[in-house]
Image (cartoon, rainbow, N blue to C red; front, side):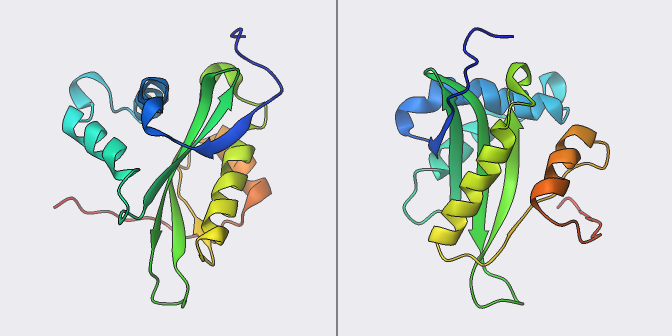
Length: 157
């Protein structure tokens, strides 16, 4: 285990000064999904994503889990309208916990932080998707949310 692991974890909104601590988690998240090296994201996507967290009119937000001055995880979420609800909904797009601190409740704390933030911003639901093969993540998700059986389709433009 890494020396920065403690039982005290705080979940908070990311701040501009946090870029150097956020970036390794972002890179780890992308690596987990095969986006590294030749298949990695263009740097302009990373920089634009980072800037969006701080735009007053942007619906995109970021929470980080911090322990002993180190970041242990991140959650990126987006607020948007829905055709089936009057209140906005929240899409939890990215959730990542550093490998050396997994199974310590940090993912659960980040999800709870997203729930709290979304509720405070007037949302009526939080939802997300994951790969069917993400057994570790799904074990947690089955405890904190309901799977409604939807299958996701995409088409690149």
